[in-house]
Amino acid sequence: MVSLIEITKQSLGKLFDRKFDPAIVKLPQVNEKHESNIPGLYIIGEVSGIPLIKLGLNQGNNLTNRLFENKPSLNLPTDVYDVLIVGAGTSGIGAANRAQELGLNYIVIEQGKPANLIRSFTKGKPLFMEPLDVPLESSMWCEESSKEEFLEIWEKQIRDRGLKINSHESVSDIKKLTDLFVVTTSKGVYKAKYVILAIGKAGNPRKAGVPGEKEYAEKIAHFLADPDEYNEKNILIYGGGDVAAEAAIALAPHNNVTMVTIDEELVFPKKRNVDKLRELEKQEKLTLYLDTHLKEIGKDSVKLEKDKQVTEIENDQVFEMIGSELPIKFFNKIGIKLDGSWDVKRVLFLAAMFAVFYSVYAIKAPWWPFNQNLFTDPAGNPLNWKDYLTFNWTIFGFAKNISPSFWYAGLYTLFMTYFGF
Image (cartoon, rainbow, N blue to C red; front, top):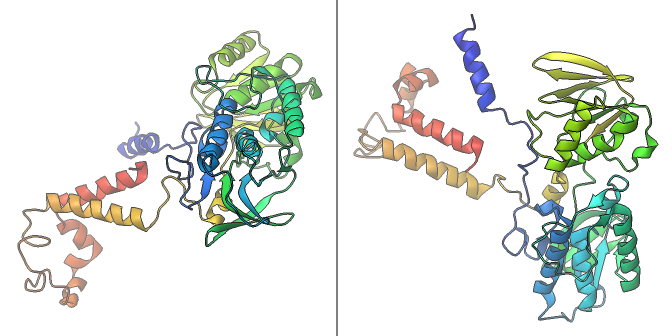
């Protein structure tokens, strides 16, 4: 018979199971104008929660408009840029294209190539410019196309319009000195009135964190650029989103593909992708494991775990497609706060909430915070510190004698802290 303790453990385990959910992401703190907690530093694009191509273009275009449309010239020294844009993804290109149209002194710093994320997409991937009911506000081309057609047209537009993009240059630090920013990169130091962070997350793929990742890193990838490079291979795809689904669909016809996701159902891929996965599974061209974890990566195999049962399968290649992570260390270094991050204001708010709840439930208590003066009541006078060494003032005595309302307020505050408020 299962003991009461075991039942309690299982129940609490389910209650506090906070496995990664790609729909829940901590984002930088920005206001309605996309300005961070650092005045003059703006955050847009995928890193701010806007991953779609058309929306990213609009966001970059509109931010530049808002900053400069009524003041196209800031009359700054020639060595100071009006705006420095970090990242040449869709949002960064949208901001840069509008800056070019307004005649601004600007520069874009990109650690890879323009549209890096789109370059990482699977060969021939169709790009859908959703949402369809949102009009395009940028003059950059943006229509449904294949990955290759999109990149060809964009590269031509970037050349023809003379967008100022420094490729293969990474930003290492951003500091604000008085009313200007000093941006340090791998190739130099820049000054700018405004900084727009339009970086994506593609350069920070999330790792599974399992044994074998470092030892067999050569067989692990996070993107599938060309499925034709793989033929008759034993391939594991670890992930439950559209990227993982599309990779599985592309590789299944000519390989032995196993797709593994921690989700109990295929809730994140688009319906058309789910339908294709189910059809491939029915045709026995794809093996699908739901509610399953990658446990270990070996030289010629991988181990999977479900319901404490471990299964080992042959493997030549692993694709970890479990999303990407924000550059938290970089944000911390330059002082950008994240949603839900703890600061003095948040701690004080939590303490105040605790005091309010406890006070409401202790309103009829004989002392603190009502009815008695702490320094006239021996039981509550902190100067009688020797009395606190007795049993009743140890943690055990305290737990025994404290009012139930205290525990209610304490537990309530802990739940608020854990689940967020």
